[in-house]
Image (tube, chains in turn blue, cyan):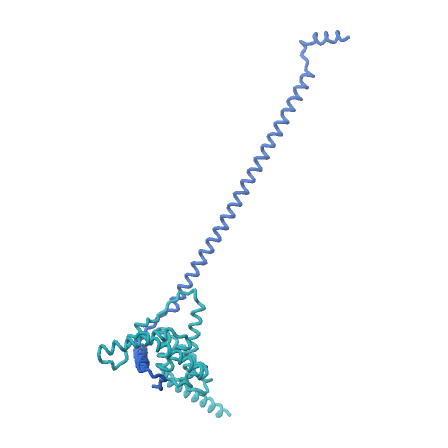
Amino acid sequence: MPAIDVQDQELELALKDFKSSVHAWGEAAYSRPRTLAARVPHGSWRLASGWALGCLLVAGSVSGGLFQRHHRIEVAQVAAEQRAAEQQRQARELESAKMTDEALLAGVDSDVSRQVPSAFDPLTQMSEDETK
Amino acid sequence: MAAGTALDAMAITTADDAAAREFARVVEKHRPQIFRFLLSSTRDVDLAETLTQECFLKAHRNWGSFRGESSAMTWLMRIAINLQKDHWRNRRMQFWRTTRTNSVDLDEASDWLPSGESSIEQQLLARERVGQVWKAVKGLSERQRTVFLLRYVEEQELSEIAAATSLSEGTVKAHLSRAVARVRLELGGKR
């Protein structure tokens, strides 16, 4: 043992015991039967499966979100198209209704002015005489 | 010419064989000590075995460049100390990983009693002393612990410790002094 620069007997004794204890432990551990444990592949498998699961979750949530967004846009587009078609249909109906009323009135006017029933001939004759 | 080439090849083979034999002798001689140092530094049998394997693998790769300026033991110890440092540095960097450690606790480490303690009382006292030193060693810095273990467990000279740790002898003395003061404090506190 090297010369220990300490006066304290107890310290010297403790250091001697410590050395003997570590030597005994080292000898026992060195000569123990060794087992081959494939720790690294096990750990890497776990790591790889963890990564794969994580990637799967991220990809799933991202694609789910994208699908939801796409679906919402599609629904909004269909609703907008339906609203526009409905508005156009209402406008067309309004237009056609207006057109029909005007045509009817014009038809009535022309019918009244053209077709004078023969029964009213003496009356028309009389009114003409009075005006003369 | 051809005979000369064949002789050269034989000489190289013989030199390789001699180097391999020399390295095998070094492994056989120093492996238990390197393992013991790494075991006392880490208190982890599996880790000490792994680092010892790595140490001799690295030594084997660089055996050709070993010039013999220091002893083989000092050279191997330097490799072991650097591997240990790298291990703890990598462990700190990979803080997100599950920090599973097989380090035994201080009580378990103190279970290994020095031989020659006959009575139960002596054994108990020795166990207590060893436990106190382990407690002090645990509280040391990495460098202080390395210097302390090399001095008081591996019984290396200050010059050898300085060469293995790449420190000056003065720095080694300072680290050793602080480490011993810590052990003394631990022993004194328990009185």
